[in-house]
Amino acid sequence: MRKLIGFIPVLILFFLSSQSVTAQVDPNLNARLQQGPLIINYDDVALFYTIPDLYIQRARAITMTFMDRSVGNNIHEFLSCLEHDWVNQTAWYCKAGLTEAEYNVPRDNYYLRTNWEFLWSDANLWEEVTRDFFTRAVPTRTTQNVLTFQINYLGLFDDSHINDPPGGPIYNWTPGYFYGYPEVANRYDISDVEQLQRDRPGQVFFHWTSSLARIIGTESSAIFNTRTRQYVNDNHQILFDYADIMSHSPTNATCSYNGYPALCANYTDEPDGGHLNARGGLRIGKAYWVLMAQIAGWNPGGVTPTPTPTPTPTPSPTVSPSPTPSATPASVTDLDGDNDTDLRDLLQFILQYGGTGQGDFNNSGRVDVFDFGILVGSFGL
Image (cartoon, rainbow, N blue to C red; front, side):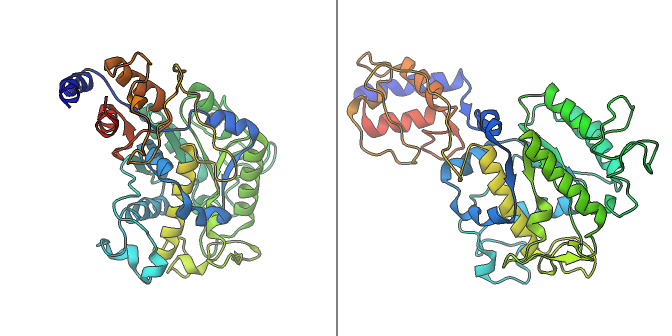
C-alpha cells in the first residue's frame, strides 16, 4: 500500500507534463475502405441499439463539422435530443407525438454529441451550397476529424441542372455536380471534393444523398442520388444515404411522389415540405450514430480491425475495455517486464492502448493517467 501511495505523485506529475491519447477515428479506416465502401442506409437504423460501448466512446471523441440548411438543423437538434432518455428529456419537440416506446433512447447522458458541430448554410441552389462549404467550412475547419456537407432538396427541382452533362443545357455556363471543372474559379463540384481528400488525407469526408420533401421526389433528385451511390461504390468511399433512410417507412415500405423516392409522411408534419418531426428526426439521428460509430472503428458486418499494439515482453497483459477490470495476474501493471511498476509502464500503457480505445476504465472518452491509476489500484503494483 505504501508503494502505491508513493506512486501517486508520479502519476500526477506525469499527467501534468503530458497529453493523454484520445480515441477518435479508426486508424484502419482507409484499409477498410480499400475492401469496399461504407454505406449507411435504411437497413442500418436498427443497429443503433447494438453499438458497443467502446465505439460510442470513440465516436463521442470525434470532432466533426457538417454543413446544411434547415433539414441539417433538424438533424442537429435531434442529435441533441438523443442525449437524454424519455424521463430526463425536457425539450418538447424531442417527444412530440411519440410514446415512450417510440422514443426509445435507452440511456441518459450517453449519446453525447458535444464534439459534433452543425454549420448553417443559407444557400438554396446546389452550386451555392457547395460553394458555401468550400469557402466557409473548408478554410476554417482544418483540424476537424470529419468534415462534410449535404445538398438540400431546394437544389433538386427538375430545373436545377445538377445532372447536366457537358454540352447540354447548363446553368452558369458549367455542367452538373459530377462533371468536375476544377479550373473554374468560384465554382465547386465533385472535383473539389476529390482535391480536398488529396490535400487532407487525415481528415474524413463522407458523402450524402440529398434531403427529401413530401413533393420531392423529382427525377432530378432520383438521378443525383443514384449517381452519388454509384460514385461511392466505384470509389470505395463513405455514404450517409439520407434519401434511402427517409424514403422508407418504419415498416420499411418505400415512399414516393410521382414515382420517385420522397420523404415518408411518418417523418414530417408538413403537407409538402421536408422538415422533420420527432419520429423522423430521431430516426435520422440514430442512423447518424451508426455512421459515426463505424467511422470510429465499429464493423458490425465483419471483423473490426484494431491498430497493432506496441510489442511488449511476454507475458503480454490483456486490458479489457470494460470500465471495471476483471481479475488478472498481479503483473498486469508491469508492462515493460522489469518486475516493478513505474513511469515507463504508464507511458507504455498510454502508447499501447490509447490508439485502440481499450483501457478507458472511467469512460472519459480517452485513455490517460487516471485509467492507469485505476488499473494499479485494482491489481496492485
